[in-house]
Amino acid sequence: MKKIQLSTSQIIILGFAAAILLGSLILALPISTADGKGASFPDALFTATSAICVTGLVVRDTATYWSAFGQSAILAMIQIGGMGVVTVAVALTMISGKKISLKTRTTMQEAISAHHVGGVVHLTGFIIRGTAAIELLGALLLMPAFIPKFGVLKGIWYSVWHSVSAFCNAGFDLMGVRGEFSSLTTEAFDPLINIVIMLLIVVGGVGFLTWEDIITNKWHFKKYRMQSKIILTTSLLLIFVPAAIFFFTEFKDLTVGERIFASLFQSVTARTAGFNTVDLGLFSGSGLVIMIALMLIGGSPGSTAGGMKTTTFATMLSTALSVFRSREHTHFFGRRIGDDTVRQAGSILTMYLTLFLTGGCIISRVEGLPLKECLFETASAIGTVGVTLGITPQLGGLSRMILILLMYFGRVGGLTLIFAALSNKQTPPSTLPQEKLTVG
Image (tube, rainbow, N blue to C red):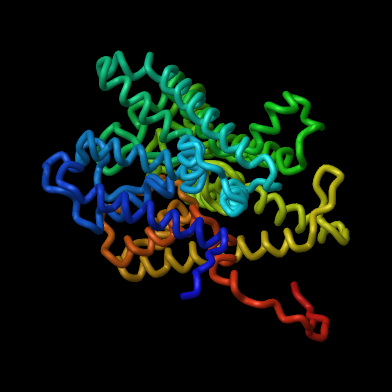
């Protein structure tokens, strides 16, 4: 019998699928729900997908529906999804003392978007240690805010939960449903909670490779890799520019200080975190469009975040500017970007927009809901964000399945799925004749 050879892309997507299936089976157990009856498989599947894909969309309130065991299982899934299934598998192999094969190293390289196979094992150790240290620090910083409100044991649990959820850009919360919305709406203007959660989201969203670059080269920006420079620059622009727009166009009934916190938090969380501190249903149409754009862009390569990635957005923006300036190539920081990278970025953008729009239109048609709300949910799903206008729990089976597929697609990545599907395809040796096409 011929042995099946899986490509690295296929290993990644099957690893995430296996983790989701296992998580679904665990959440369907009677011990996982507060009523002891167990969740239906569709609810368990949706929740497990949302947790593994670090999204945060829910069909059942996390604080009240799931038992302590169920909540712990969800938190474990968030951690696995944030670090990456392959990273966790490699970490367990390292702990067991087994040798890391070249195939495993290659898979790990693709999973964390590393540039070279060499040093991948060392980088895995850096990711594990860094994740543990940051999440522990985040939990310790949140304890002074949560312990006085919920008591010692519950306060510690809430601190650990929200630290892991924020760093992994998951957006799951334990604050309970308040009206139609949940999340951190009651903590909207608590400076400690706001600042710590935002910092955790940003740290998790810029990527492990970027932080390795920062630690290695300290704060000497000129010494950073070009990718790190692009990620940091783009991330700062995507935080402060939308925040400034929100400050001047939304939250008119808040004080200046409250508007600053609300504007910054919504700008940070929209790029894959999923928490919210204000009622998103009160946003203007233009504000929701900005949030949809931020959700689609998402975080950075090799991070705990999803979306089409900051580097994709920056590449397409720089390519457009190059065309406007009649330049032949795309440039960043005195370096030229290869044409293959530009083509990949264009393909990713096209795929995300197509799936986002198609999913939203289908859900709107099937459910009879306004298109704006449906597009917001599909952007949140494919960007693995988790912010919602409150329609997810009332959706039917088909619409929920669409969101499940979008969350899965958004986490494993567009190119990973394409490479997995086309790994055995042979490239034609010949080149077709070229003919000029007018566009624009």
